[in-house]
Length: 53
Image 1 (cartoon, rainbow, N blue to C red):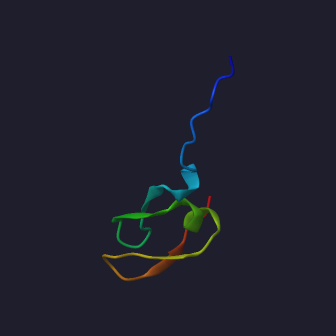
Image 2: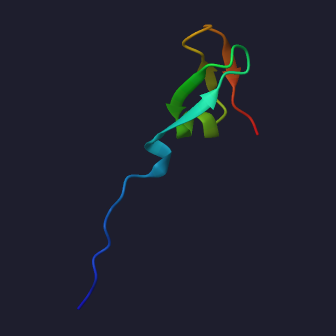
């Protein structure tokens, strides 16, 4: 018997929570947007920032 693997969604498609460095609000963005270093716009203070390690 062969076992079938379940296909799961790629975790990069899921949203992650990031804290805005300007106002401290929690912003939910797709993981690929944070990993790629794209500009993230805070929905509360409307300022742009880049997620970096």
